[in-house]
Length: 128
Image (cartoon, rainbow, N blue to C red):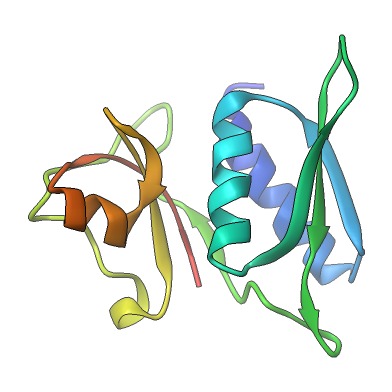
């Protein structure tokens, strides 16, 4: 697998379309921090790490009736074309209604946190 973050986002998108209540995917620290941001921002219900040797990340998806809370999720930076932005160039997703997830030198954070702290980094994905 060349792009595990893109794989994670695609699995979330497909699980929402199939109206699945939960989703299992391979664990990594970056994926876990992205899941933490999705939970903090209210896009997923909960997440947890299962297993000792081969860890899996379990996401509990969130719905409003039969409609998914995540309307769209898109990978911005890819292994072939990294997208780096400075603190003044951080994009606003859907005029502030969505969230951009950014990998900075101080960890993975939302676009609002990065603007507040005055740090830039690699734009991983956008969620709305």
